[in-house]
Image (tube, rainbow, N blue to C red):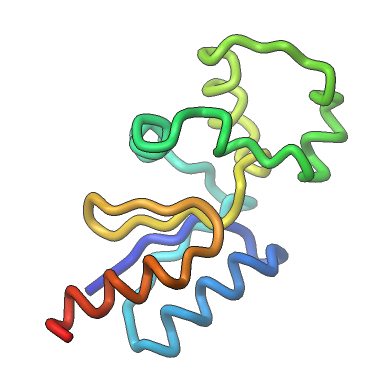
Length: 119
């Protein structure tokens, strides 16, 4: 079992997710959004599942720095902005195969682990 977690080391929720997986001895492929943005394909998976709006972290410092509070952008522009400015994303984004979550979703992650391990 291997999960992919997108986030930053400074994010408390990302650290919580990484700790959750390490406590269960699950291999994690961590993508630090400060070093490398999620690919358009990866981001598109989350958009298809949840829509664009839930992915935008309106409390993020970067959101404030860019003055996006009053911005009225098209979905295409938001998608482009999220690929160019990954710190605007809610963290962590977690993927296990075709299963996806936004933010800390420990109950759902536990179900993934239990199903994978046949519990």
